[in-house]
Image (cartoon, rainbow, N blue to C red; front, side):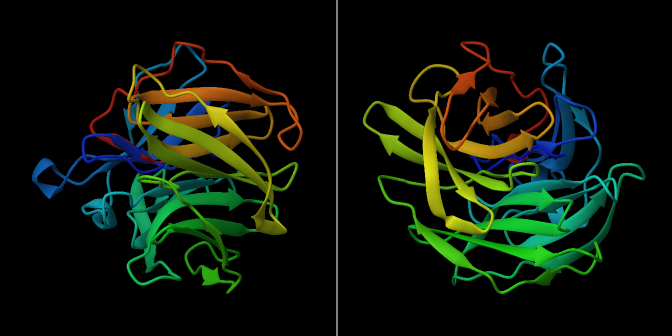
Length: 278
């Protein structure tokens, strides 16, 4: 399992979160704004247990910069007890046990100027999913990670139009049990950010089955979703933004209902920076 975080401002938690080994705990990359503040770090945070403080696991050489303002993604691989982390241009494998970067590759991108904004892991198929934000388009594709340090892109890219004022798609998650893809779309509206999560089958990731709205944490104008993480055991979707993590219960995500478990009390990030991958 793994939780995901997505992209946000330089002072925000930029992470694509995924469910970590312990239920209710997310792992993600937080972008701290630049090398003048040191390399950004990988954090874990226990969300369900009274929103504990985030714990840093260290940094890697490929986490010292960010591509664009939206680059960032994280996916937890339970088999290797490691985390795939992207800064938007590279994908590095970071081991939580020894707290160091094991290897890295340049991301395979579909568009000139595209950036990785989300990662998600399927342990059953040994597949690493990637969300890439281009100009008004979200590209979805995957890598074969049978060899964790040698991902092979599967040349299966499809695209989804992402339209609207300032529209961004920065969160990505995978439902191992139902074989579903979740991705976020955020639009900057007159009254603040409008956030939603869209649902698709992993077999046809760019064909939308359903969508549902997600309230921003804190007061308006709020912020875009910067990461998603899903726990198949508890059916909980963890939605990260600049101001915190909201938890949604997905009993039947292709038909409903979707239950907001956080209400007015999101779990605030307590590390340095902003979730850009979860």
